[in-house]
Image 1 (cartoon, one colour):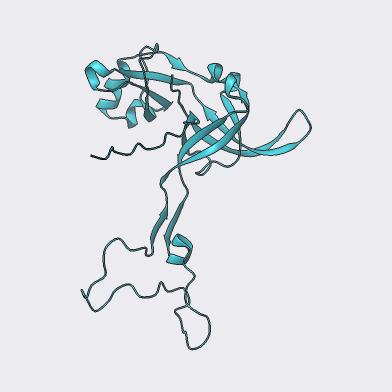
Image 2 (image 1 turned 45 degrees about the vertical axis):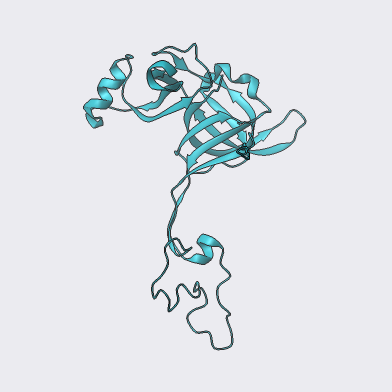
Length: 220
């Protein structure tokens, strides 16, 4: 069964292995996540379970959020996501997902999805890795310029070009991360490597998804 759990990034620290090696790890708080809804193929067209994380007050929640959470006896949640399933699940609405069943993932790879840090408006050199223009031979105040962005025909800037703009603040999935340690009684998971996002960012943690090569259409 495909598993997933929600949480937030707490920060980074160091972890000592059994051999005495010191490794840098990212500390994530994962769960508890109540199951808010179960979807099946017959009714919804696909199998999935919807979970929430980080309860919030009803004062800052909409009536739709309050009503949806009360169906399972829970408070409104700040972070809600659906976890797709390949087959039917034994979970029921109202169940709580914790790290107690994740201890078998220690030493294995997982993938973490989070929103990256916002960088604001950035130029093409930082945003896309452009080299810029030369710093000598008559180049003045255009050292970080992108270069030509159009032509006489069609006398306009074509759409879709790599230019300056807002950088960061996008949902990013970091793969190849390994679980160093799981502390289920404190809802903590230590991951070797860096996780996108600032401290306090919401994260979606899933086991590493096996690569499936795209199938080519048969030639007629």
